[in-house]
Image (cartoon, rainbow, N blue to C red; front, side, top):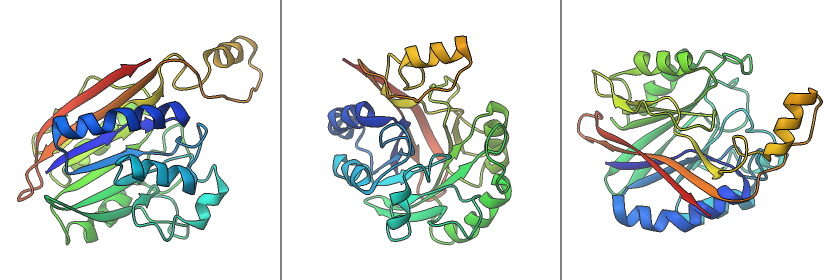
Length: 259
């Protein structure tokens, strides 16, 4: 199975470059499914129904979220009924939505799980235990399981990847918006990268207008964030998985810049 996972889509610049590049990447890689983190896709924070449909129409099959899952309140109107959008599974079980889903692709079924870290982030349930819980039903349906781990700390992302090595096909880090160069396949067949990166403004500070961020560092005063303008970047990873074993065969970084 061939999988393309797109790093955090930020605002209109991220959606625009996604729509521009995805058809060519589909032709180049022939991926069976495209998964994208969309928690910043609507104006730089959260997601709306209209934006979700825009991503689907562009070729995204599944949308994962993160700590900005609830930033746009209208998400509560559709997250329960949309089988292709998931929020972190370690949010309380009473939270709207679901933490994983099963999607049928031309190459077979794939399970997608969303988790969120706790280090320097929200005080939510344990991602390690949540992963075990979600795997109980996902592995009954398919051997191919993709995990989006939305976390701040490099150590936490690495620890979860080692914990899940051999249990899932890949653990792909999101949230920090900077693509790391540590992609690899762990000893028992799980592909891992600390952070897939960001699909959005290239000339800001992790997607935000750089002048706003610089001024905040200098003055230490709060400010309203605005999505940066200018050139855009596209960050993703391409993963190949053996559908019979669920083990990863290849992982490659994808990085392009468009003016």
